[in-house]
Image 1 (cartoon, rainbow, N blue to C red):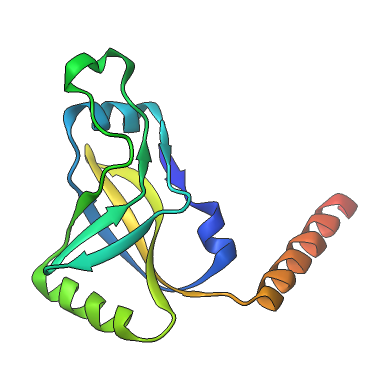
Image 2 (tube, one colour):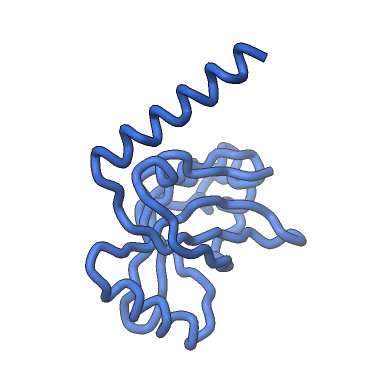
Amino acid sequence: MEIKNRKAYFDYSVLEELEAGIVLTGTEIKSVRKGSVDLKDTFVVIKNNEASVLNLYIARYFEGNQFNHDERRSRILLFHKKEIRKLKEKVAQEGVTLIPLKMYFKKNHVKLLIGVCKGKKLYDKREAIKKKDLEREKKELF
């Protein structure tokens, strides 16, 4: 099971991709297995040499009762110190940000694919729409 952030590929050009683990509670894991996750409008922030993902929506687990989690809490990402330093340097560049692209399971661990991204201009988005329309028309002809 894989949850993708389609809006990220439309709004940003991805320069580099990195895989990170994410710290979750028990009810969050159950909600992720169910597929109740939304990556839209999420981003990664580096503070105090610690990377965390903000605005990640993981729905409450219905059977979780008092042990349930806050749906939009900040969650810590698992990176090595060297990786965090490199990411900090990349983010220091103008117009570069860290965006979660995909969430998936890898050997019973939840992984988050982080993209080092640069924002697209409006005319770049129009070109992307044109390309998609042309590809769709080609498929319809054949």
